[in-house]
Structures are given as structure tokens and as C-alpha cells.
Amino acid sequence: MRRTQFLAALLVFAWGGIASAAAEIKVLSPGSTEAAFSELLPQFEKASGQTIKIGYGPAGALAARVAKGEAADVAILGEAQIEELQKQGKLVAGSSAVLTKVGIGVFVRKGDPKPDIATVNAFMLSLARARTIAYADPKLGGSASILVDDMLKSLDVTGSIGGRTKLVPPAKPLLDLVAAGGIDFGFNPIPEILSDPRVELVGPLPAEVQRYTRYTAALTTGSSQAEGYKALLAFLSAPAAVAVLKARGFEAP
Image (cartoon, rainbow, N blue to C red; front, side):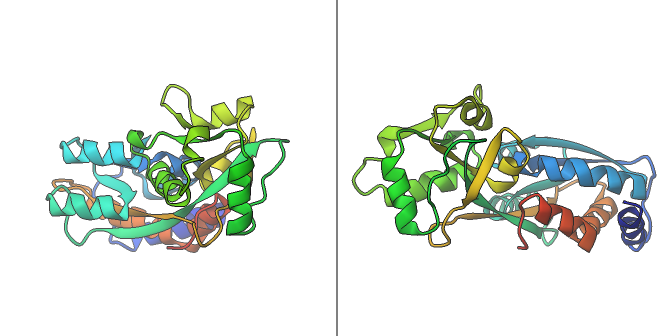
């Protein structure tokens, strides 16, 4: 821990210092980053003297908030969403940086039988045998749920999968639903699965059908935290932080 904090401090001060030790950086970030950032951001705060105020939610909903002009300094979203917001002038041109990428995993309630997903054919057979599968309703704006929806529709040539699919509304979080039983398996970003001890990761989707979200950060237009943002990027790209992200299920971009 001490070594991690020392490295983080060196990276922070390498940017030439922070304007104010008490300055606050407001960040908007997808929910799948919460477990990793809950571990990493306190280290950054201690090393830099700055405070991070972070709000989590579905990436699509966060992008809509930025588009409407909500006060924030840093947006962490899917790469396409960042590019669109830059076109709208909501984010500073040239400030974006890809932090990491996250794949979609298949998961079950802890102790339940695990479907075979080792190959595309095995995965398709597991889909055919399942009574109920579940993922978050893509209308909520989550990057992974949109990708899962697209993936399943591309595979569901006979229309048989849709009838056994449960789309989870915000009032009933997906992890809670699967943990309660009655669902053969669900789909979710791998970091979110690993953060909940009530469920087990079966594995990532087969490579041929896997979908990734590349989480990208950018500075919002009008933010006064340009130096703090640079320091945060440096901290999150340092080897110690990358190791934490990898352990939490994220991959190199």
C-alpha cells in the first residue's frame, strides 16, 4: 500500500503541482468501475491532497447528463459516447484518454450449475437449454446491456431466445435477481460480477461473440480542474493502479 501511494504521489507532483490542496474533482463514471475506484481513488486523494466526488450510473444516462450541461469535471464513458459529446462541445477536444476495457461475462448464483460456454457452439447449446436468462434492460442506457442485447439478437435467428429472456428494470438490480435464484444465468460486465460474492463468474463470452466497452475519460468544457485531471489520468495509468484494475476484471485497452 505504501509503495502504491508513493508512486501515485510522484506521478501527481510530476505534473507541476495542484492548484489547490482542497480542490474537488467531480467525476461521472459507469457503475462497473465502482469497486475498483472505491479502492483506488482514496489512494489518489491521499497522494494528491485533492478530493474526488464521484457519481456512478449507466453510461448512457451519464452521457445524457453531461449533454444537458450537468456540472462535472471528468466524464468516464464508452469511447463512442465520449466522441459524440466532444462533437457537441461538451468535452474538451484532445483531452480524451482510453483508460481500460471491459468485457461481458456469464454468471450464475453461487453454487448453481454452470453452463458450458467454452465455445460458440457450446454457448449456443447452453442458451437453447436455459429456461430463463437475464440482463439489464438496454433502455436504461448501460453499455454492456446494449451490447448483450445486440449480441443475443444476432444469434437468435429462430426467435427462441427472446421468449426466455428477462430484462431487469432499475427497481430490481440484475445481481440481486440472479442471487435470489430461478435464473439459469445472466450477463453483466465482468468487474461487476467479481465484486458480488453471492454470484459466480462462469467466464467471459466466447471470443467470437464477445463485446467490449472501452472506458474513456475526458475533461468537461469549462472545468477548472485540468491539472487535477492530468494527475488523475497519470495515477490511473500507473502500474500499481493497472494491477488493481486487472484484478477487478478490467483489461488493457
